[in-house]
Length: 424
Image 1 (spheres, rainbow, N blue to C red):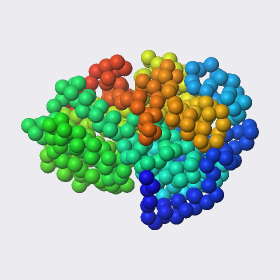
Image 2: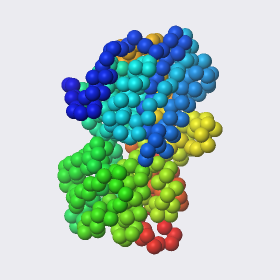
Image 3: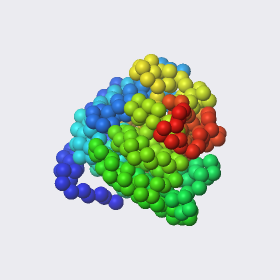
Image 4: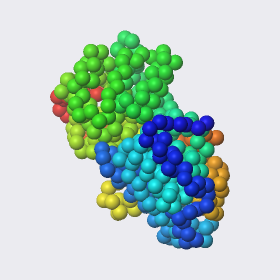
């Protein structure tokens, strides 16, 4: 299926299609494989984009220099099945914008990238992946969760992170696990979501899942992620005073909404974020004690290094480079980069067709991952079928893994405390 979009993106498609490079490995040399990295390096999500950039660079460094870590394709210097070929990264700044992402994807391909990885924002990933698909270029997405990204008919698109379908199901499973009912008797669930690709998908999935499980959605409250005031949304939420708030937000809006809840004295029994802005370090840095006892879904958390020695080793290297620990987004980016580089290594070439075949045949075991997943293996649509979700909660200023029990380092503290509670 071909997706045709109007306006600026249509122009990008025409420009991107000039001089079709369907696997010639243009720009790479006998000694170098060039990978294009698309991330929001400026703008509201720059903190996340720069963290992911550092994680992907670490993955390339581990390929390019000798290492004893049990990671795919890591052995000597360079990609072993390509005779020690080095990995070179070139970067494009999406600015969190879908049209810019498409333009940057075309630019990186024209600059010689034989594969692309990115883009964090689901809307940006959708347009960039369309450019890559039109050029026959492999596109590895480690971090965008809108379910429809694997429903576009793209043949060059692969996603290692679970989609929001997995995460929404995890949310309801977690609610059952802690014995937290969502029913008409307690005003049910309110879904607060940014009105872009990411948030709209969450609202649709959570609403449909609630209906099939006989639960109640009291209200859905959309907003623009670029908004600077959330008084209107807080007033809407206060009308129903729901038992549970499920929130799909990027960074500045996640922070702004929590501040608005406090101002309006909205105190549900639980506030649950859908990752994204909630796991940006700026969330805790800006909210401080007001973030206490908020829950979020995630794919990775720092306390997982206590039980995963590979994750601990990779985090040590990452922290030595950046001064910061890995977080959910950067851990996913690292994992996606290692998956792509492993496929290129198994293909024995940077030409697109063999790399796409190698990606399709991926079967990475849990023992070679820093993620708490069963492995990485792609279905026909390019979705990793072995990924999973965890739930984390802010306790004493840090995120603690609270679900599932197999990886939890703390129990859930419930219910959400009053804003004036001391301690919170």
